[in-house]
Length: 227
Image 1 (tube, one colour):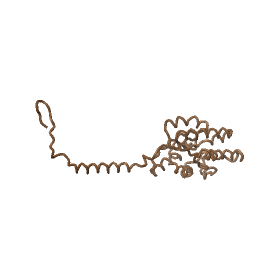
Image 2 (cartoon, one colour):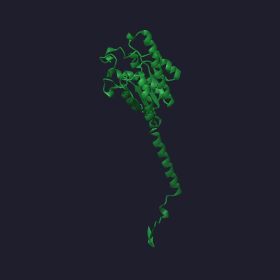
Image 3 (cartoon, one colour):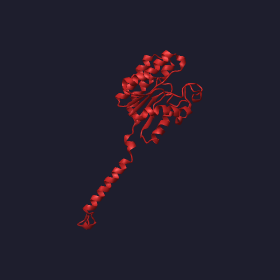
Image 4 (cartoon, helix red, strand yellow):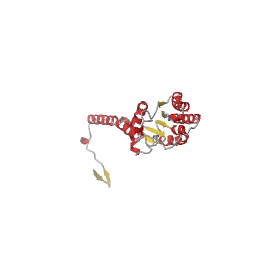
């Protein structure tokens, strides 16, 4: 660097400049490094958001939240490097009507790739008209699919004291809607849990912590193809 008439001028030594050959080698090294960095994060590139819209069966009622099947789902996704983030939008006591009200905001806020619908059980326990439950679940499916999300319905069954006619028609709603809208479906979320004393809390309605891995195993085979 030299000074002339009060101005500074940078003087470069031609011998210090890299040769064209060395520049080409350096460029190739940068390209290889960039490709290597991209290949280390495929899960993040392919991942997304899973929204669970449910009631007490998904909100871990009576349990530590970390013991609930939804939290266990997040852990399994991390273990499998699926790159998905789970948003639990489940509220104890919620009905299908509540789900229709809450879903639009959740879709706008989280923009999920997959919506897991675990609702309807409280409708059945209250003996609500089946037409109402079906219409609400249908609206939830349509809204989720219109937002570009894939839908997984978690089927439910009612206790036998509700009578076979009502109980069977209630359970059939999930299969009918899944077929109509080409949504995925878990036949029965509480398979191997419902009616098993050691799996249920004292109220006979809500599963214990020991039941949560079983519930996740009921969901996983139907959720995995959607990832």
